[in-house]
Image (cartoon, rainbow, N blue to C red; front, top):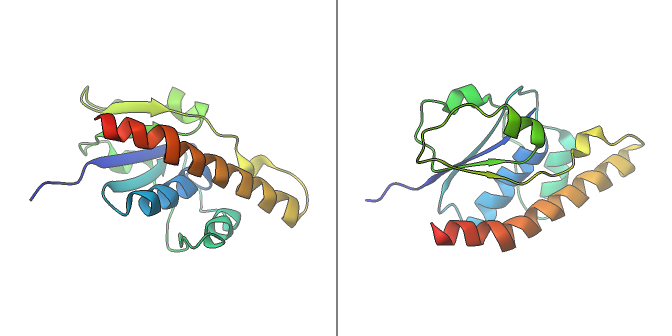
Length: 143
């Protein structure tokens, strides 16, 4: 049996963008890949990220924030950095690992009331979904 290709999605805190990206990509690819997310400075999964995905039928409520250090000894096929800080602080991966960068705004930095913050998470969720359904899927198909 063939092993699934591994995708690691990185950002700084592993609290919003990479968590939403992990849930979305698992949903879009129907678990055809082994997909994880991690952070260079992990914190906690933001409740707004959980809510933004639950609104479209994706449950990440059991996810936890993980450190990229948990994955440095694994053979990863693709590393997707979703913020500039993670790109700059990405640890070394073997040459066979394809590193892809696409930066999204950090919805966790949005100030304002609960609805304003949640709207920011929804906007980034939709941007990530659009990127996956167009550009990223083509990258995977070409490999």
